[in-house]
Length: 302
Image (cartoon, rainbow, N blue to C red; front, side, top):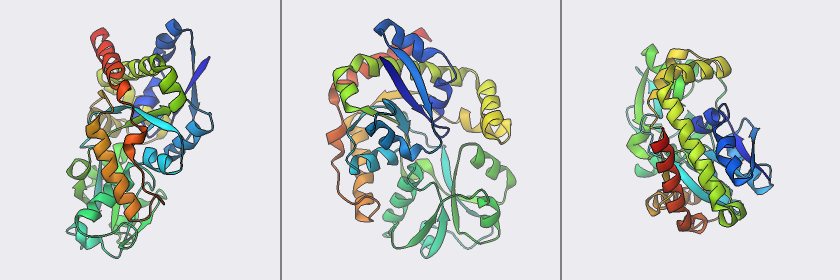
């Protein structure tokens, strides 16, 4: 049997795993082989799991919620430690936006459907505002820094190397940092059938992921150079972004489920998902110990 793991650029753990041999090493003793399916839009992960294109994938906090709302039969497997410095909502340094409340009636650019939707929706909700009714959300077009600087948009949620580059200019102010509002974990999920019937495969994938994380943490210059060559930007900015990540996995616990449920409730309230979901329905407590053991084994071997 071939186990196919989905890979997209927005998930750094999967991105590096696909460039190392760890997954094949972990699956071989189980009699399985490894394959990677590369795609560009992480919001499609739930659909790819549902149609069998991939067996395991990872995103930020929002896509598994929208996948569950769409009726896809997925389960949570593991999560990263919180990433408080992964992103920020930027505004013009000399502009009129002084608080989240000032965003009412304005346009904000963000990765719609990504963890950035969770960040903005919750930040607005905390101020009594609605993601649906009180701002206009637009997808990135590549000119966000210029548009923000000249006032055509009011806010821009940036992450990773693009955030490091924006910070260097001095043209922007951080209205909110990711960690001010959400935990912003990487979230890994799988087809329910695989997770229920073959938990040892899930554990092997998590071991490989944690090994890849350890590699990235120990080789930041090489990881940054790879990302810059493949995705563009300055290697120094990628180094700044990558060294800010925790590179540590954890089981998906009841605490994480509560974080996701809060997000799901906000999403339903503002119409981002069209039905309420119970996040606990796609949480498998039986996976917690195998995942914890997998992380521990990878760490000890490291």
